[in-house]
Amino acid sequence: MSNSFWSRLPKPFFCLAPLADVTDAAFRRIITKYGKPDVLWTEFVSVDGLCHVLRSFGEEGLTLSHPLLRDLMYTEAERPIVAQIFGSKPDHFFQVAELIRELGFDGIDINMGCPDRNVEKQGGGAALIKSPELAQEIIRAAQEGGGGLPVSVKTRVGFNKSELETWIPKLLETKLAAITVHARTRKEMSKVPAQWGYVKEVVEMAKGSGTLIVGNGDVRDVNDGRIKAAETGADGVMLGRAIFGNPWLFANLPQLRAGWQIERPVPISPRVAERKNNDDTLVLNHATQRRNRPSEASALRPDSFAELGLGHPTIEEKLRVMVEHTKLFHELLGDVKNFAVMKKHYKAYVNGFDGARELRMKLMETENPEQVESIVRGFLGQL
Ligand SMILES: Cc1cc2nc3c(=O)[nH]c(=O)nc-3n(C[C@H](O)[C@H](O)[C@H](O)COP(=O)(O)O)c2cc1C
Image 1: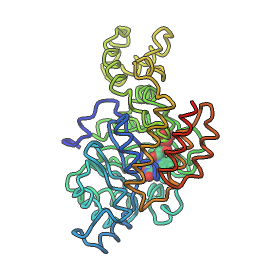
Image 2: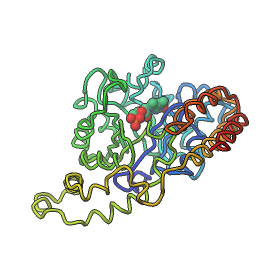
Image 3: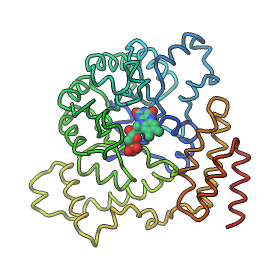
Image 4: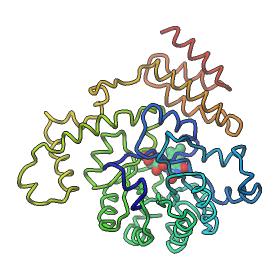
């Protein structure tokens, strides 16, 4: 990772999680426009599927007409952007890593945490936690095919129980650029709260390895992520479901970060400073001190957004962006994805204001952007 974008990221850095059928090319453009995180991920794409496309069309014949390639569509503004892939055949990872490099991505991420039965049936996703040697072979194939492109892994803490002590060293042996730890086991799916103590354990294991550790699971917003990073020593934080209906999730990142930099020199107790010159520990102590002092708590409060003068988006803004998102989805993906994909976005955008329920019900009946725009215009006209 020495020369890659990973080494140039601020600490802690903030990533947009891969969310299949949510963070598609259209939503990523909207997020990049209204609040860009430090790193973006594509949705996961099957290496078997991509190899099939490669075989059928040949590299020269590849066009965006194929749905799988549409998943790998991105714009320059989204950099650094990482392509996430899944599967279980090392030679397919090699070929697809070559393709990802040729497509100009900044990194390759391998999914080793997905609990989806179809993915696991093929030996991919979380199933790889049970086959650490195969996982290593896959990583090495991607590193070779990627020809220097940094390779990272996104995984869980274990299959049925925590297997960090055996699983993480196997991953670290392969000199990954980064490991994202979703702080739950495969068995837990998303049914129990993420346990960030696991992230802290992985951070300890990875010390001195050169592999960055990204914590993931239940992060509400940037401030919450910053606190979790400080408490665990994670290099970065990944946010997923918090982006639903909120492309402004990362909008206050530059302002908050500037505030944190001013904050850092605030005197810490000399005892703490003496005890350790380890930066991570100081940040942790500092964050803990601040949280314990109510008068200064505002720096870590989730609603700093408003304090910084950015303001929460108004209902009009939210709905305007929802229509913009819908049009972009139709334009970029309308021929390969079902319009129903947009409905889960509507549920998230249209929430928490008078008339939201009725508006949502109307939007659930729509089939195209024109209908959505007309319903929204009608609603805004009544406000
Ligand atoms: C709808 C949905 C789709 C997801 N798709 C992917 C995916 O393509 N690749 C992946 O590694 N994880 C995927 N995940 C898991 C998320 O990336 C993330 O690890 C999980 O949601 C926990 O983070 P959060 O609490 O911030 O949402 C998905 C999760 C959801 C809810």
